[in-house]
Amino acid sequence: MQDTPAETEISFIEVGAAEAARKIAMRVRHAAKPTDGQPTLVWLGGYRSDMTGTKAVEVERYAMERGAGCVRFDYSGHGSSGGAFTDGTISRWLEESLAVIDQAAPGRVVLIGSSMGGWIALRVIQELRRRGDGNRLAGLVLIAPAPDFTAELIEPNLTGAERASLLERGYFEEPSEYSPEPNIFTRALIEDGWANRVLDGTISTGCPVHILQGMRDPDVPYSHALRLMEHLPADDVVMTLIRDGDHRLSREEDIAKMKQAIGTMLA
Image (cartoon, rainbow, N blue to C red):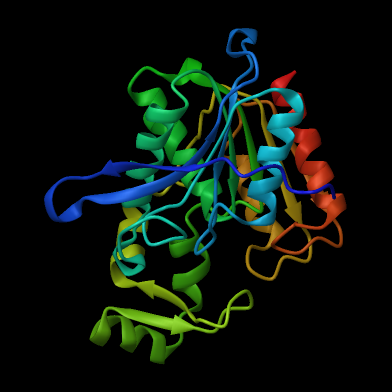
């Protein structure tokens, strides 16, 4: 991979009111020619991931190569944003995502959602369509998407000790393969997940969709991505199954596939 492009400066917006107010950090790269009509790329990261991750930086690099705008940001409790991670829920991170998009990418967008970011991207689309802004969607790229992961992937596999911890402490911890710090899953996150389910009916995006999924993903089985496809019957959906791909999909060959998918959305 090439050298990292000069970092875009961090700017902040405030989301929420009173005690729920938090500063959200974002990096916005403007299009080379704002009049050329290219949509802005918006990166939606995964659980405990921030905007400095490999894929997020590569998305911005690709936007620069194509002359397109790009927005990266950190959910509250992540990276450079304010707020406590343990206050995080899908609803809270969705509110922040919509605020960032409205502020930094008010035109047409290609949403690129990784893992939990795929779930949030689908909810962003539902909210944009609900308020009559569905025509702003130029495309959706989902990388190891984890919609409804709290109800579908976490709850069915809880141990007795984890269930007890949720009841008694309001959260449970598990070791992380990606960080020395454990993953923390709160009762609020899990309960809020039910209110944001998308795999309970037909999902209409009104835009082309490309799903990239590793077949050796230990966190989100590829059967989950296949199930998501069943809920997108009206959309133009392409799925790329990567036989030896893991959950991160951050190898050079994975990044190349991601950029190719984004490129078809910009064309």
